[in-house]
Amino acid sequence: MTGPEAVLGLDPSLTRAGVAAIVRQNPDSIARPGMITHVGYSLREGVPWWRRSRRIITEAREINAIVGEIHGATPIVRAVIEGPAWASNLPSKFDRDGLWWALFSILDAKQIPVTVVNPVTRGKFITGRAPNGMKPGEHKKLVLSESQSTWFDDQHRIKNHDQADALGLAHMGALDLGWRLPSDTRRRHVENIALVEWEREWRAS
Image (spheres, rainbow, N blue to C red):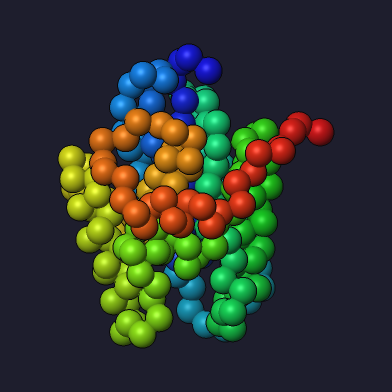
């Protein structure tokens, strides 16, 4: 492509899913963050099944609208979504899995190639370290601060760690495609991009 194009990053979460895009105007231009936002809300424990279902439906619809807005203005050539946390045993895992597949299916239905990234790989790409051994919430703070440092000119737009996660995923996708970016490429970026099984065989059915 010679015109504008985008890479989408998506960090699925029931309470606050991060959505971010990195956009370049042409192959010679420097790519920069476009949309950076989040959607979702909390539910108290023990709510009925239909409330849980409606949260998934509401969030999927909102993200579908956001993706449609981005894709309509600037074709998304790749989406990068954080994969499920397989070791998680939280009560909400069943709901999060439902949301995850809904979002993946939305992207696939729009004929956007999707790459799935392990949560630990995404975290190490952004911060240089895994959350192992860190206090609860400490790694999330590090994700936010490192993201704001990496994207210095846009740091005021990155409001929370979920947005930072999504932008980090888009960053991974753009770097793998060889896009020019305003930030330095560090060793942790190269090493963790190499760990990703990038989707290169996707095709419309």
